[in-house]
Length: 128
View 1 (tube, rainbow, N blue to C red):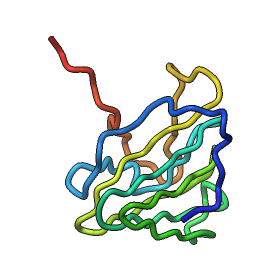
View 2 (view 1 turned 135 degrees about the horizontal axis):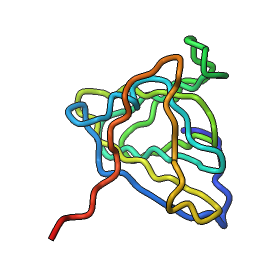
View 3 (view 1 turned 180 degrees about the vertical axis):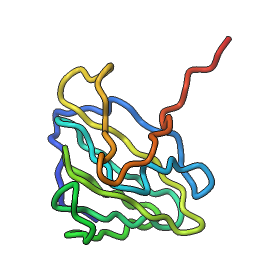
View 4 (view 1 turned 120 degrees about the horizontal axis):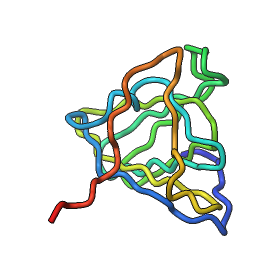
């Protein structure tokens, strides 16, 4: 598990639905980072998710590798470049924490160097 601490007065501003190998956005499997002022909390419900952290956008060798098992979580600090890998049975979601009102703010960005199209990762409101 990571040793990053989310400040106690911050709140979850957005959460994703659960991801598996079948529905994970390709962008999460490549270099991306959380936005300025946003912590990402990866919560694993089943299997394992391996978090690879990079010193900068261009690095290909990780400076940090964290294996997150079922029932555990890890935290990515603001603007930290990373990617994830999943076990075949993995199921996880991501909570995005922020201090300020972030309702219209991007929670992450993809790499310009290791770029893949970003897919929608947040649940859409049901149409009535």
